[in-house]
Length: 390
Image 1 (tube, one colour):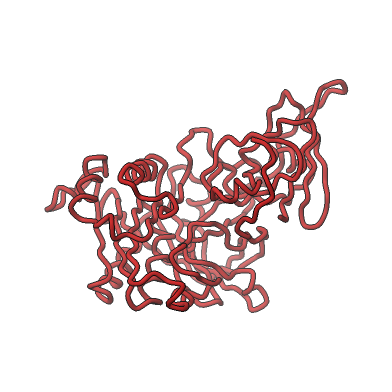
Image 2: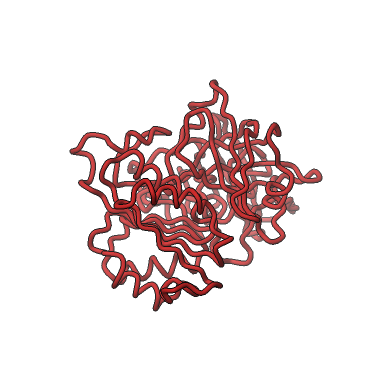
């Protein structure tokens, strides 16, 4: 991958953490909660958001900094921001959040990030009413279809509510897969939306470990069931935009199927829990320490962050990412998942050449403009310069 031509790319906000106070913790299921934070007046501009974006939460556990990303789940007022947190088996942060987090506590919360947002309408930050912008800028009676699995419903809830509550004619169709009825996050909210918008919202619940009257909605969503849904239930030709959120295999199967049916890639928005690689997982808050021998060949990685230039030497033999090398010099380098999924560590290649392993967060136009995920990117030239502020 060479340093690309200079073309415009979508602007993204620099990731910054602020201490926010927990306003409420509301149980959703036995193993999930909705956490709402108060956003003080002076920080409201920083926490404006688009439906579908996420925030990263940061906390120390026994001296170890842990970061986890959670999607914003509501179309709320500018004074609050809410996320859904499902307890993962063995998950340090999610278990603590479900069992110990309480109103009045303070957590470091990153300002909203992410590109899992609608392109059908021109929207503005935390202003879902902007979905009803000038008629010339919007699709007449748009039809939105979402596939979600488990906690993948979290960003989909914000997107669905925005289209239903802030437009007069958008149709929303939801296919939501869970193990059983007791695992359905936001079940009450989905029911309320269905009651309020009976002709505009269709919700199809698939339960993988419970039998339902219609066998199409029982058992795992496999290729056969997906084809039946697309043939008999969902009018593929009418869909203006698709939203997919869940584990890698779930999302990839749907993406591949839609592509095979001729659905344009730009109509399909997706977000992953992880890439499916067992090696996935947040990197430590500080770059992995590396011993550099005096005569060892190194890459020189220059990076611009918050208006300041820094440099880190990276041994060629270490085969480390730009993010890891940068963290050794600056612990404030932005990142959240460190797995190529969220896009928080995005930077622009200014000089030099690189190779990027995985990319599940950047848009094609961003890659074309020279942006990379530094957690997945390694230098291939002696000297490299990237700009986190670009």
